[in-house]
Image (cartoon, rainbow, N blue to C red; front, side, top):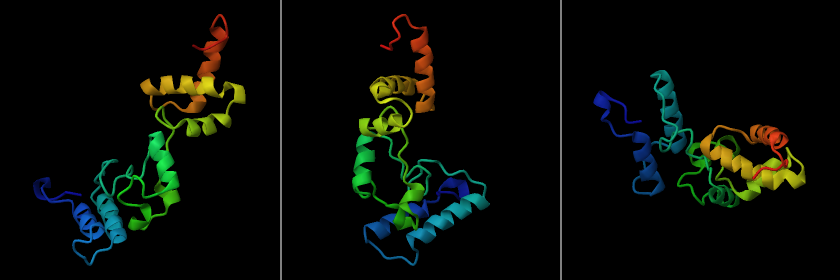
Amino acid sequence: MGIGERAGNAPIEEIITILTKKQIESTEFTLPDVYKTSINISKILDFQISENKPIIGENIFKHESGIHQDGTKKNINMYQYLVPSDLGLKNSQVVQFPISNISSKKILHNKFKSIVNTEEIDENISFYKLVNKFSPEVAPEDTVDLLQIIKRRSKDGNFK
């Protein structure tokens, strides 16, 4: 984690991972043990790990862009140097495909298919992408409701 005197110590979890994955040097440490130990140390020290921290960050298996989501679903190794099983984790527990304005049309279509009528899907996707660019925390369900309010108040009943 790079913690220590004056925070100058090398992040051992990154070093061990590189040595192991590149097969440069074998160590007595296993990647699952390194992962668990790092998480436990952070809890003991009440040390917040950055979400994007290599190897142990919460977002290391998070894929927002549509092409990454699609590629990762087809082949877990596509965009990941590490896979969850390297750290003793299950894919279903940690691989994340959040919906955002950069998600693929297919993923957005599947999401909106479950909350609006088929003929309203494209319009809702367009509106969601627009709103999500400026408010990333907004959920698709919220934009559906907002679009309905806007359409009721507009003169022609359409969103453009």
